[in-house]
Figure 1 (cartoon, each protein chain N blue to C red):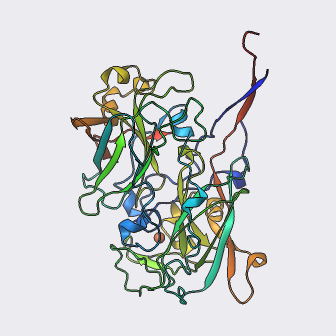
Figure 2 (cartoon, rainbow over the protein chains, first blue to last red; figure 1 turned 120 degrees about the vertical axis):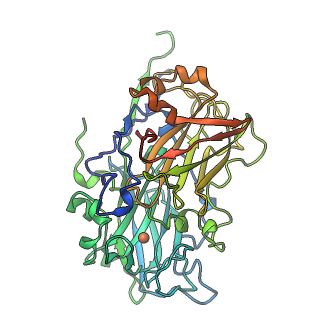
Figure 3 (cartoon, protein in one colour; figure 1 turned 135 degrees about the horizontal axis):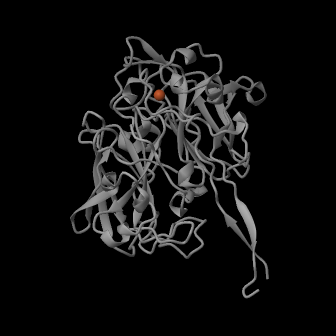
Length: 245
Length: 205
Ligand SMILES: [Fe+2]
């Protein structure tokens, strides 16, 4: 009898493509960036497995930030948008049933957080928190409002472009990723010290959500497409020799 | 070597920022109307096998200040060395133990805390048994790419001395940055230093 086995083998994270730990224009990185070289070793099961979440975890409104914190009959303030896309790996394989969490400021650029000090108003119908699982083809979708830009203490007058924070699990702990989505055409993108930790315009483009008229809902919502790629798993399949042969 | 066009390179990382809690631990932030509990706040769902332990510690920056806005996640095997994962083919992991924990550090003290179990040994790809360890991932404002490291245990002297990763660390004096110190039975302290003379060894895995 032939038995097929599979070995997981994840592509290395390309450190020349990701931001450097130390990016002095982003001041918080100065004392929070390790100085030594990272220790590299062949991944083990400890990195190639990871937590898995079931669809029973996800509530009906978890991916609808317009309504998930709104009072009955009310909704969050701001331009209504759909943010959608596909979660794939570097070999273009869709990643199904994988948890995506997002958080964002309200349409005035204000976060619902105890350390937040920006003077813009809170929206009583908006918390800025959402999550979903990708479907069997790796697709995901959120309904939300356009977050506002906001000022932040870094240089004397730094502003974040409108953005949504994304937390991605994949199916291995080694694929764990946190990143941000920016909005096509935002003039603040090129002025932002956090965006500028990215090393190329290509990298910035990869974190840009693009207006997609085919997905808009007439008289309801604009739509932005944002595909997410996580580390590729070069699964190697091989035939085991039958016992004793 | 497989060449990957830019389009299909991994999405580049960006910092989690200071408000990571809103999306990852909303209850901790006071957003209580959304999820029953914060994901990863409980790792044990019933009676579990093995030695129950508390893992606690603080993350320090290059000035020796503790981070008050960081989030830590851990991933580990159960007491028999099995992962609660569909990819686990060596056996059935303890169904009452998730193996995954998430903790926002205390906003005032910077302390993190996990109620978990001492993991068993897991073989590496060559089948060599590793010492008991916990995989750690840290994100925060100022951290551009999430940091991976491992917790080993100071009282597992014999297993540590033959661990395939610990034994290949060239700057051997830094090996101790990967050891959780046993404070008393069932309580381990693992401090993390992002910079400085005690900088923790971080992994590229
Ligand atoms: Fe933000």
